[in-house]
Length: 101
Image (tube, rainbow, N blue to C red; front, side):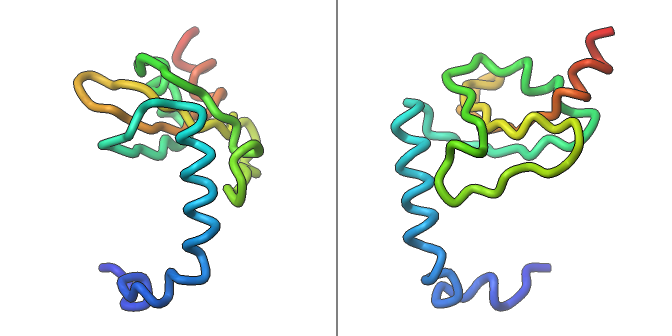
């Protein structure tokens, strides 16, 4: 269930300039306009390896974007094509090292 405050456009107004700035930055680094966004948790980072990449952007470079504090997480935004969809994925390098052994 979505919290009521999350569906109220007025509650998003203070964040809109920051979101717009982050999105504008990402658009300068990639031609991809994702139709699908996937947040990959631990153990699923190898899925990002299946993406035909257009760009990999470290979170720390994206204005106003939260930086990953989880140990072993790469903290990258991966933009590209996965199967037939333009996609955005976030990956963990520990998952990659476990699956590539």
